[in-house]
Length: 264
Image (cartoon, rainbow, N blue to C red; front, side, top):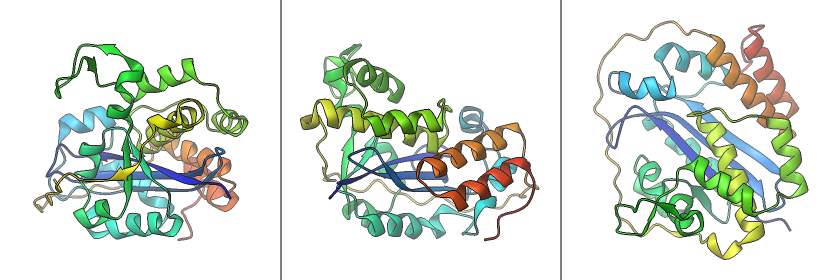
């Protein structure tokens, strides 16, 4: 029986106390087969933060266009239970997050306490051995996701399934939650295959840092399906193809082409 794992990433409207703009998670087997993925986009409760928008590119117009795959609540605070149910449905052995304290800080404590977690940033610090130190007083710098991935790619051979899936999905898209999840999926599989003792899933012992954002009023513009949006819809379609989900792939490809709306 294959073992199931998950990876998780958020894009947000700022630091803790701000809104979640996208929530992404991929569930996969220890052999490298993707079985399902969660990828939703949300309007912020508060006014958009232009500084963080300049990093991830999720303007209100783009969020509106990226929400076209299916119907769900406009705000993450009204939909976090869908993410929790996604994980409960698949019941992975653990969920890998690159910066665990940051991402889980946007989840209600009840969600965090139900799962087992592994922080790849802290868990692979000694493997990457990047000079510079870290805030916890360690000798090595905490690696960024790309730095940890490059280290694992240099040290460990991918499984045949991972090689096929990476060929299907293609190049990484920076600051796109689903693409960051896919990169983390490859990182976890390589480390599990080469140094499995480094991947230690455990319940979160830290107190909840969750603070709901303050609700505000602002105008919602009409969705804009520009090249940025189309590129991300096509990327999600390739993830659906890798997961053997042809109906979902076709919906995403049609949305990317601007042919029709989702039937949901």
